[in-house]
Image (cartoon, rainbow, N blue to C red; front, side):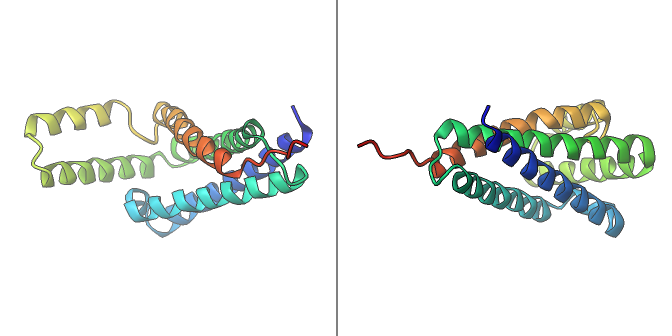
Amino acid sequence: MNEIIKKNGIKFGVISGLFSIFYFMALYIVDYKLFINIWLGIAVLLAFLAIGIFQLSELRKNLGGFMTFKEGFTGYFISALVGILISTGFSILLFNFIDTETRDLIHEELITFQVENLQKWNVPAGEIKKVVEGMKETPQFSITGLLYGVLKSLLGSIVFGLILAAIFKKNQPVF
């Protein structure tokens, strides 16, 4: 693997991971209920997208102004993987070893939020009960829930990575 791609991916993965830790700590300090705020979630998603755009822009520049789809996707995927692992490691430590009480409070707020939303959409009570039971089986901030979140985050990152790599690819002209 190209050393430039690897270094770029690790660098931006660490940046993403540290950004995520900072974000989690800010929410944790201000109010645990912010963990379920949809608008903050969207804002953070856009921030990660901006980091990815900047990363691929810098990668292409470091590769001499040209970058294949594969190079772009590989760099983005390395970055996403490193960032997700840093973020998840921190979350596991914080919510499963340091402060399990806050983890449980967030989980209860999340269940309440989900029930209220399902009721707004006139979902039958039986279906709501099934959703709540499923949420109670694997709380989002439990170790299992966080590891499951790694898979979901990687899938989302793959989609973003494919799109961004296609946008940023620039093949060398053939003469």
